[in-house]
Image (cartoon, rainbow, N blue to C red; front, side, top):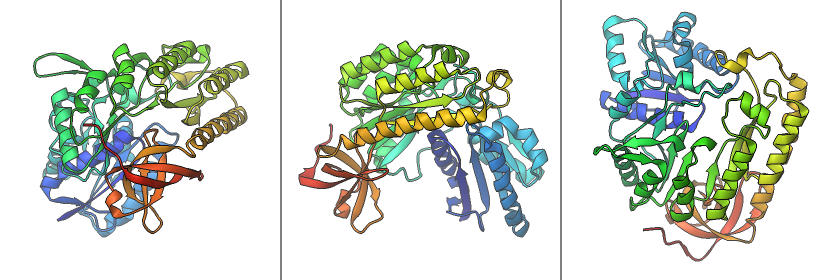
Amino acid sequence: MKKLFIKTYGCQMNTYDSARMADLLAPLGYGAVDTPEGADMVILNTCHIREKAAEKVYSELGRLKALKRAKPDMLVAVAGCVAQAEGQEMVARAPVVDMVVGPQSYHRLPEMIARHAREAGHVLETDFPALEKFDSFPEVTSDSGISAFLTVQEGCDKFCTFCVVPYTRGPEHSRSPERIIAEAKALAARGAREIMLLGQNVNAYRGTDSHGRAWNLARLIEALAKVKDIWRIRYTTSHPRDMDDDLIAAHGEIEKLMPFLHLPVQSGSDSVLAAMNRQHSADDYRGLIARLRAVRPDIAFSSDFIVGFPGESEADFEATMALVREIKFAQCFSFKYSPRPGTPAAAAKKLVAETVKNERLQRLQTLLLDQQDQANLAAIGKTMPVLFEKPGRGKRQWVGRSPWLQPVHVEGAASLLGTIADVKIACLTANSLHGALVADAFHSVPA
């Protein structure tokens, strides 16, 4: 067996892509290993969203250079969004790289390996053949775990002025519903009991079935809910513009669709939202939250926020704080604005000072963390169904997730793994809930 090491940076989409790359290379005799030492092939699956992402990749390539010196036939590939954005520069700057493959071209890895063997030179693939990629997916062979990722849509047509995704992932493209359902069944057969549907704008899903009929995300979720051994369904990441009536209704009608939604807003200021090209207002967002709570009163929300966007005034920032206080989020991700080369916002002139960005981020995160603590504290004393995913650190300890995505720790038998059991929450630690199994704990799951 040849040894394959994949290091994954960034989002859930990259985690999914890394698993599919492993599936693609398995027929060539590659088996996954946990370290790059002694590997026959190393893949760095990169992300371009965070600041200095490319520099982290080059730093890792510097470490791999020494390993390749000891094993010259080791293949080094860079995949993902940094590869898409900087492929030619990467080959020139880091000769250790044998192959560069963009996120829409990794289905060509077997062909690229063959080309490299024939031509003994650098091989680059950074096109956007999304349809070809989706059609080339092999049957799932890698371990999925109890909770599994499933890509249904890729790319983005929204062109937020701060974001590189449209330039690295290409335009929006949706997989066919039949292929998604078949993959969900394959994941279930390998032990998955929860699926997280993935897309850059997952609620922009617009698939077409073999009869030419259009499907939206709500219809897809309804079909996936009929897969017997899939007990829970989630989706991320959503855009407020794509929360249609059907999807909102689905949150009140489909039992397997969990009551937790990540719905990024980025700012509470209409002027900042306009500068970001978000194409929705703060009140539009408030209206969506109200409609979702009307159909599913126990739904919890998380969001993304950027502070210090060019031109953001103190009043703009206070509008964001007011939105957060009003909505009350269960979880959130917040970041200082940093420019991404090639995006419109990178050319903006009215920059916010770093000291101001730091101070605003601290204020926002203090509020968000307090809201997260309040949401978790509200669980104490309640009994909730928990899907157990893995062993904990302690003896006989098991870790699962509540319907609201909170980690929950209990003591129990190994038979808990892969089941849903009722847990009475007793206390809260920094990042998780702790509780005890109730009598007759095993929970009936939706049919």
